[in-house]
Length: 321
Image (cartoon, rainbow, N blue to C red; front, top):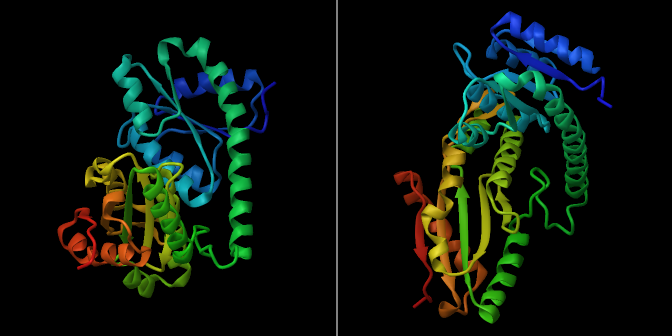
């Protein structure tokens, strides 16, 4: 049975299509259905009240469905919400499917098959939305609890990530692991050189809001077993283990650099772009022993060059003279 209170937003510049979709959804038992005739109008409605499911035409004037998807995902980041996005399209082909999913679309329906597929796809979205929203709420409560407890001062209270002390403990554990089992270690320090001036301009609430946004963005970009930490008010650390040093090249982490530098963050002050620099230190068992503090210090020393060049600056670790 459908959830009558599932919030659905239909976005289509063709009024006839919207009316037809609304009738089908209403007949299926959905009561909370809103309509927008443009992507900008849809964003205003979502700002007022988030939607569980967004049904949008791929081809619209001014802003198409893929651009709308990117905007909605930014709003989701700030509101701890997930909008299930289904695009309606007359386009076919595997390249279309790949392009939609690469841009964050959850599903899409060919207009030629909409009469048969619309309600079943919304049913599926309905079930997934319930699970996703529950997980988001549980994760938010968990983050709040962790921040309050601070787990013996190993947790950063603003972002809920591990702090510098936690990072050094995990770095020591990882060094012992590669010494006994082999493999290689990559340590990245991510610096935000403009965050302090932004803090002075917009205030402490904004500063914490932006740090949480950066933390969420990074969590989406790293691998599940990577160790991500907030080192201080302007730096994050990332620790990852790979099979060999070839996995520690700057190209392996380009997604992090681009994800921070090329995509703005939605905040209470509007969309804010940041500048991030990354220093990368790599090593394997051949250069051990090594101290965690030495590794992190060498990574931090790479940041000025990273800021100046706009690139990830790598360093292969060697023993101090």
